[in-house]
Amino acid sequence: MGFVLLLGGARSGKSERAARLALESGGGVTLIATATAGDDEMTERISRHRSARPSGWSTVEAPLDLLAAVAATPPDHFVLVDCLTLWVSNLLSAGTSPDEILERADKVAAELAARRGVVVSNEVGLGIVPANTLARTFRDVLGGVNAAFARCAERSVLMVAGRTLDLT
Image 1 (cartoon, rainbow, N blue to C red):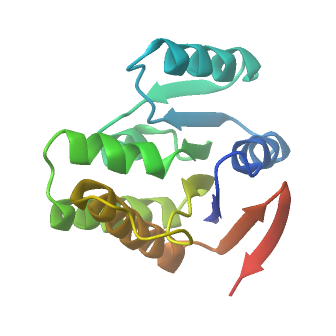
Image 2 (cartoon, helix red, strand yellow; image 1 turned 60 degrees about the vertical axis):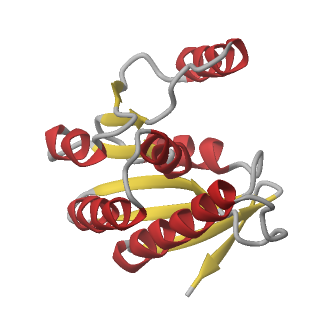
């Protein structure tokens, strides 16, 4: 039991690797999607992701209540969460405090530790210091959320250019 945390930059291969792990799990898969369609480009991106999923997968849309979505997943299913980055963004946009987001992250990560699965998130702390308060808050909160999930993960991996680097 346990989950894999896949971290990386944009277009680093995280979602593709997560889908491959889910396919290789050999059982039922529940994908928990956190994206919301706020504009035409995101609507198209979500549509492409949906059409690429195997028809036998269950999909749950959980832009805010990730814990409830994970808890409701059948215990024998492989859980694929894509992604923590958008979950944190959604929570911040909804007015959730950074401390509350970190508390929620601890609970979700603990719930996932008893399951088979994979969690996707962006690593945003390797760039420049953001120029505005909201962007700095987002970077800091996501870094804390990623650390919470890494503490509970069976394995943490950094994706770069489609390649994996195990983190210890």
